[in-house]
Amino acid sequence: MIKRKPIIRTDKWSLKPTGEQRLLFAETVKVYRRLCRHLVGIVFTHWAQLGGLSNQQVVPAVERLIHATSQNPNVKYPCIDKVFHKFPSYYRRAAILFAVGQVSSFVTRYQEWQSGTRKRRDAKPPALNANTGCYPVLYKGQCYKLHGLEQVEIKVFTGTDWVWTTVQISGLRERHTVNSNKLLSPSLIFNQQACHLSVPFECHPEKRQPDQNVVAVDLGINTTATVSVVTVCGTVIHREFIHPGRDIDRRDQRLKSVSVRASQTMGKGGKLQKGFCSNTYRKCRHINQQIAHLVSKRIVQIAKAFNTQAIVFENLKGWKATGGRKRSTLRQRFHGWLKAMIRQHSEMKWQEVGGKTIDVIAAYTSKLAYDGSGVVRRDSKNYALAKFSSGKRYSADLNGSHNIAARGILKLTCRKDSEGCSGKSSRHSPRSWACLCDLWTNQIVTG
Image 1: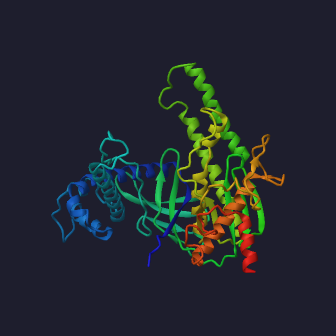
Image 2: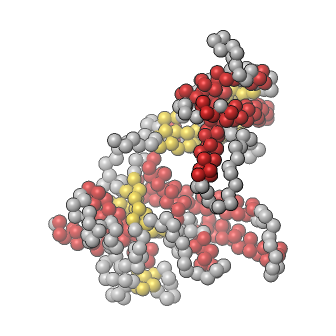
């Protein structure tokens, strides 16, 4: 039996430290990173003995090299205890695990490089980076103590000693309210821009009893997401267009300003310096993240409201745009298409409540009419509209979402009853170009 991986999701708990506490947090992060740099070198030196050990075995093995006790007075690296005097044991163990992870990653990547697995033929070998921007992991009772949900007590470094300080929690998310979620060890994130706890949760969703319907999503460039809720008999019970136009306009205006500044900087020829408009591109990436989260959140809300079996997407992995001239507006819109990001966020949110996401073949989902009348033609004046052979005009994205739902339902039913769907030539195989009308045919035959 295949054991499922645990679902880990992370919440951000904002902190409101005083000026003195900010200095303490900065000193704590500084000394923790300093120890990590030392440990990376030690672990790499003894990797031949440490590489085959489990997490439960590797921590005491490294401690026997650096930490003197009454039973182990003579250690190989006594300078660690001298430099990091009174360093809390649980902070030290967290740093050991981080160093082991860094060395393990480097060794794996270096072995792949040696074997010839490279992105480019002239790729340089990977380097072991000990100066990483890690943050201290807090273990409950030893490094932090929760006082309700208003305050948290954290063990911090003053420069000479380790003390406890109580800081206010100014903002929470909602995963702690779910009884089945298990709170894991948080990390103290502190820098010039942020001060919060990164709190991971191990989610254990309850077993669902879904209704017989699916949510089909057509991701497009005219409309960000077109959603249809379709039952197994082919009845469309909900339609919705999700298009956060305000955020898209904000992003496009910023991207347009880049081309204007580029033409003013280099004229008709020349090259732009490295990092040109990097802040603008960073803001656009953040806006894209916001759009993906808004759209995926609404998709999952619809799936919850209709207690659906699955969310169905087109399999667009590896898809590349062929339409549009170089540097044209259409090509830019394809470049800003968030198909992968929306699908990923939707799957993560839906998986957290116990749902499943499936992919279907994308070929001819929008080109075939959902009523079985054949190939549709796009309206010459409005490409978002599809013209059926009967003369009816219909939304091309909505037509595609109906067909996506049909293929998803046939894929689900084929999993339950594979007798009639195992062959490649089967009419209702998930590999076929199924349409919504195929569900109607199935309903008549089974009825």
